[in-house]
Image 1: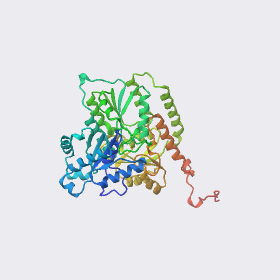
Image 2: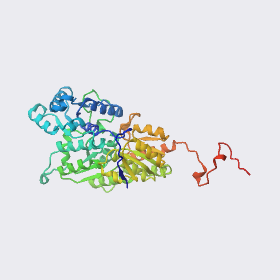
Image 3: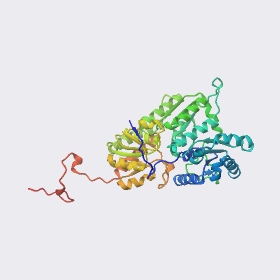
Image 4: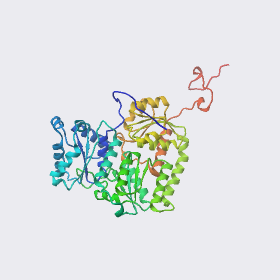
Length: 464
């Protein structure tokens, strides 16, 4: 499968990845009544907030400890304590998720130790759940920050259960969605689980916090997400399913805490991938057959595959995305006869990169995407909104996927998982191909090419 390539360069001129603290902040926003808190300078927070506001088109309650030159040298414990106190007064959050930045990580702050000291001397903070994840900007990408935040939430809020006294909720299942899944995709996964009579606990859950809904009043914290009271109850679930290889660590920790089986689904896009998930749900629910509505969705996907394969077979495309997303979309396209001539990703930490159906996977930027797409003869690009410059340079259609998508509305409503989402994705790809004007030439039908001196727009003149 894909061979990992790491270009040696001093600078990235056309960046692809978003930072790990931003990924952690997004995960924290999937918790009910949450406020993400960046421990760093104001600029780091402002940059992340602009990205999320333009992507989700919502007010994002992202806060900062506002480190300056003096506090960076002397330590930022006072800034953390002051920030928590201010948030309690102004926003009354039930949950505060702290993400470190390159500034505090480089200066060597012991943030975990500082938090212990603060909690010991501030009993007025006891009514707020505070979770910290180490997410320096210089290490990893958005997907890694999300995964670290999810692991930190499980570690802090899910108590270990005693194997001999464990109470099991027979119809409850934990679902840990990866960073690449949109709010609509999280909602679609929950729909699949509920169709089998099971009750999912989604962690983190953006489908109720960043799905784009009007609230009765504005508050400086997340408007939805995983209920805090439901997180400790995850230890009593019958099983834990991780959606995306990046969530394997959090799922394993949760499985150990609750002494339950764990299964990682690398993707839920494509017929084979969704079949595996539905089969697991049937086993968990003790069902011998899938509900009629699910079977009909599957049949409609099969019909869509028949319709779309005329346009996806032989399609050469280039993709730039986080590892989990790149794997999910490229494996679905591979099953439809498409070929990935270039794959660029953001982080080497995810082992799923080895399984991406491409000759090489480059940890690089959008400059690598442009070079690879040009060299491989790609006719379609898949990337986030910043890939539009590459698409314009190459004159190719761009299928927008990932984060950020700031030049289109409804990014939170895009769904490419499950039977229904896969069907929509295949039509999306096929329609992008159909939208490109095609000028048939003799060589396309196996005939010898016409000499340039005899080629023109009118009827061909054959010399005697």
